[in-house]
Image (cartoon, rainbow, N blue to C red; front, side, top):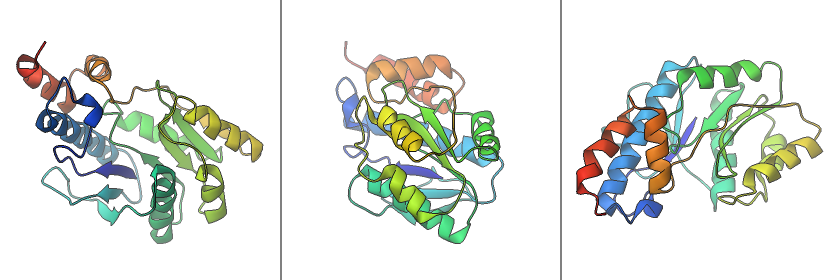
Length: 212
């Protein structure tokens, strides 16, 4: 599963503005989303779902089921994304956002493999959050219990989620840490890590147009 916003100027990646304009930030968001969707498409999966806030565009490849995001706040939207996906396909599920365009099919495959031996898989993010959450079972109580009340977009979000997992007595595995693209510095770091990505190309194309 990918949870994402339609890459519209002024609606996505607002922390990139400045130095980028809203249109430039949206172009970077679209490139990141394309990279993410391509990585998911290349990873083994029984079903691929895009939980979308907004409308699909030409950036959406074939092979995805699109469901609207539901809920108030990110924690609720994440829980509902699991609910909606697993209602149609009750199997181990992995959810990522559109903020880590350096993700690879190999990392996603590893998340799926780890769910064969663990209840939960978490991909920690450099800002203290998480870039991936995988759950082995379709139990709605498990999903709600993990995410309900966990504050999002904070430096301790990942730590609080891991504490919730430990307190529930669940077997957890960690993936490598990745960097979310939230700031211009993040964008440069991610592009350097994934130089052949669409995101890196989009950032390079904007370089000359960004004011010093």
